[in-house]
Length: 390
Image (cartoon, rainbow, N blue to C red; front, side, top):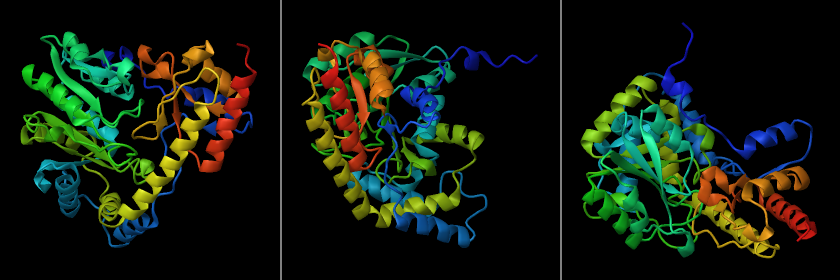
């Protein structure tokens, strides 16, 4: 019998959207500018590389603590206390292979077959497959588009049923670029408490802020015992290929997550964790410089988009994404993304990749290319839109 498990064959297939289309065109030798993939253009800071290399040379190459290197977890706990205002200890932390692994462990540890998980739409689609692998079902609740994609509890509560187990929160938000304020998080927390729900908080963009301040939902009154907070070095430290992240959760949930991680990876590579330790202890200035560069590119992209016919774009408060409304072009986001790829040779993501609410939008990653390439991409798109009929 060669049939795969039904949870594999009947679940959603992980997709990389326009990136997959672009690869076929790129194979023909065309110069494409990639603004669809959330990959930092910066190199990993030298101090982080050096620390990992030194750990290799020092022999940190064998089996290690299943929860994570103790010194690394202690540094993470200090960061959680100082930056996130989460009263953490090293025992409250689990080191993971990036945030993707952390979210998989969180979902597998908390979701039973038949459970429902609420995603706030527009949503990050890569969480869907994890819920399905756990036997759960995702239910989308709309953000308030008319108010700049704010969290509105009156739009979420009707989606809650007796089967609802968790809400996944991405803050700062991919794809909209919103940084949720305290009032929004308090409203979400009130729902979670009233209906006895877990909140799985994806905070991978916590440091990439241009306007406003990041607040971890675990710090809202009543949320410490029902929040799994997920973080990673992926974006802020340009460590996407390192696959390094961490989770903070109340003890019963953290133990449950460790049952998952101990079975699927045993533990994260120890020498990589020493790179993460250096990032926390020595990488702050370089990280802030990279965020400042992203802000320059954000401003270039937003200004250029707002000069294009039929396009409106609010400045994202955080993340590395612009979320322009392109309804005025008379085309859907999917149709326009294909046109931009085929005729301007710039790869942007269709907003519908993040749910039906994104149908009149594009997601444009300004963090994935250096400034000259960003400027060239905006010029290409602008020339295309200016010559389109209507």
